[in-house]
Length: 316
Image 1 (cartoon, one colour):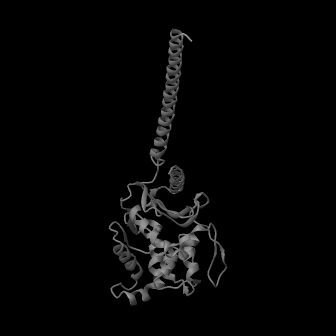
Image 2 (spheres, helix red, strand yellow; image 1 turned 120 degrees about the vertical axis):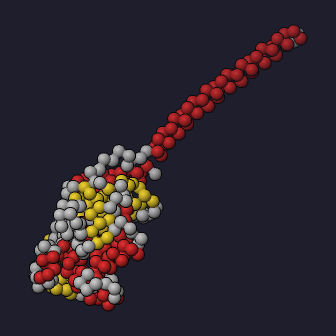
Image 3 (spheres, helix red, strand yellow; image 1 turned 30 degrees about the vertical axis):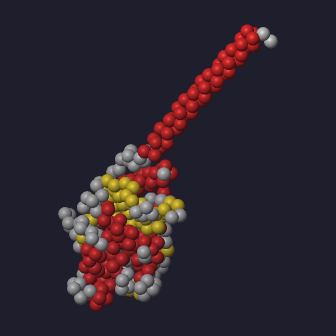
């Protein structure tokens, strides 16, 4: 082959090779740019998902609310969680914790006339004889003020035997306040065992949503005393009377996944309160407290909190 032609052919091949490489580079750069764009878009999507706050859009009627993730020991949500408000019948949870120190679930107690009068009836009759475990279930489920008075009255002498500083006739309430002190709760105090308003201006007990969650966490350690609160209509009654379905005051039970403990509260001064411990999936436990809502609003508020918990747990 002539040198000039060979040179020309080599020059053409070099240009073809260079052109091919250049085209490949351009295609690679385009692909990289596209990948980068998709990657950036996905990054933005992931970042948006990670930063999404299901609690941000909550509009609660309650003055105060608090959600604690017990499994992570972290606060999931709070609204005025340290505001001191009337506890109403949430008070019955620390009452049960106090009297359970001296009363066994299988012993029997009798309903006195004084307990019925102080508790304004509360579904109990003078002279009725109750098994303590059943009376605890009734007091918590039906939110019976008379039941709270019977439990406090029955535990009085034994509590004073353990705690000599406790006053006669007020040992249960004294012990409830001591429990609050021992737990370091500064916004919580009790004037009676039921949480019933003492007057038009004086609540029977005060506390905050955050502090009440501490009592609920303590109740988990004695879950057998509180698991009746997860049933809608347990059959309860005195030994010398008929057992019947006891309507649970917690209307939100069907909407609460894995309910372990629940307690309602309502008085004129308190408005509507609701506090629960629930386990929506194995190994995930939450405390949720709503205070200062309305009678029906407390249930709507709790359902809104539960939906936020559900969405938030899936986003993680």
